[in-house]
Image 1 (tube, one colour):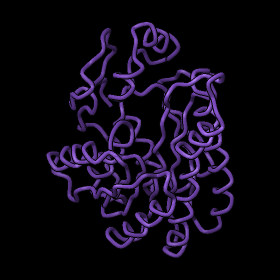
Image 2: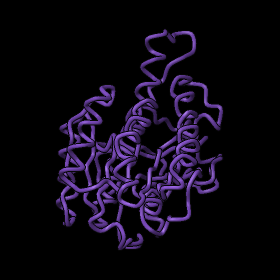
Image 3: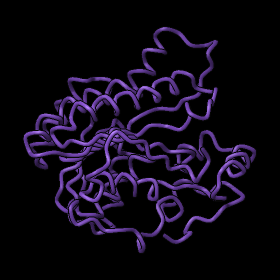
Image 4: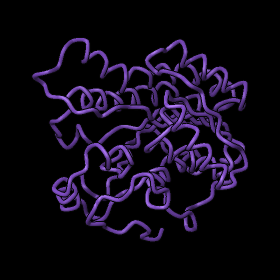
Length: 279
């Protein structure tokens, strides 16, 4: 892979598709992903949008759920411009509504075929302190960042088993590993993702359904750059990373593609950290 996103000293335009999403020339192609049905939560922007586009470029039949209809349309437009074989299908769903989420997954099974890869991605890393935490906000952080992972798995698992297997990829976070202290509810929820991965990997292993976690470090999405970026923060991140540059959504997505493809058939119950060597 070329160093298409070298270290930059100032904040780029987060809406610049070339800056955020980069070129494709040297990424791998996975024949097993062509026409494979994939469902992604939180696919309208950020890391999720990058994952949607990368699967679509592989020729997968992609469905994704989100509440941001305008951002979802922009993601689909970007895929269309790229000339993907199948335009992604958007499902307007609030993932706090588990019944609606499972219904959308059922509709995607009808629209796209049996879902062979599920990417649990949707989350919110809004900053908060331990002092301002309330019971309601704690429950919200668990529901936004963890609960829907399990119930999405519940919705796809039996069809995957009946079809001979599949891949479930849970997007975690390196934040709890690094003891970051500016969003305790988020960090606790993300640590729970690993519990889901390891438990479900053991449960589904005999049925050839693989479950893995992919953990981002600091990935330069539009949200991160517009809400949390600072020169001092980036300086600290690059100091800690082995790679002295930003990590972008398309390169994070490559590990997700590998795990969804037949190439990752022997991988389950594992953590894969994509952070430029920071951890």
